[in-house]
Image (cartoon, rainbow, N blue to C red; front, top):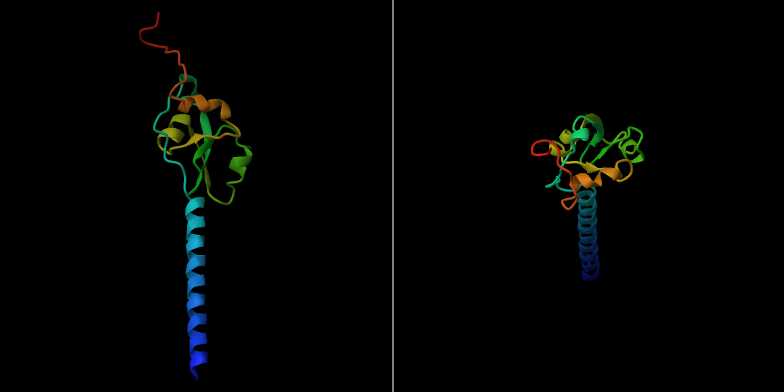
Length: 126
């Protein structure tokens, strides 16, 4: 082999190696982004009327919401990607770290709102 051929092979090999590393790095970044879910809620107040209410969750690596409706499009999109569970609202939030779905449970945003005005019932009320 002459020197030009050897140099060409060396450059071709280095380029191929660099491209493979870049592709692997991009795939890892995309996979990490797709599999990242929000941390569990730190603040929440579940009202008495929702304590026994049952909701649906999709148990997989990326889902982080609970659903009030079994036919919610976001929940249906989970089909084949995870398992479904029917749990109470407190369990969905406390044990599974879920937030409310913005498609079917948007009206429950106040559960996680620290500034929401809440009327206390129970002890101390006339």
